[in-house]
Length: 80
Image (cartoon, rainbow, N blue to C red; front, side, top):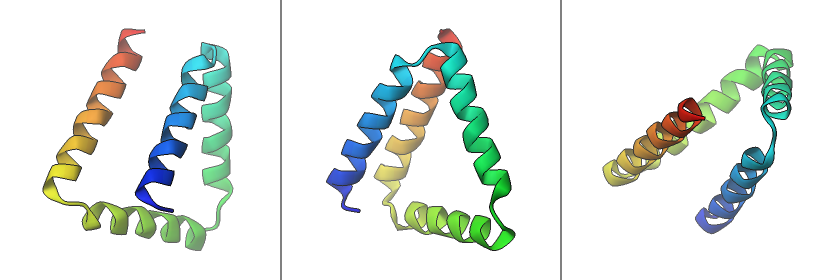
């Protein structure tokens, strides 16, 4: 997936999440958690390795921007 595709996909997911009610968001989170727990250890390890590789491939500036974005998202969720 290209950076542009990833950004578009991320924006779509964020818009869907923001449009959800608290109950819908909680249900969605529970579904994702159940899906993760249902994965085999090998699948989980592969996903984690993929995420780690993407993170390690980022420049320091990209990492800093990503961390700032995560902090801002958490702050906005906590403020709701």
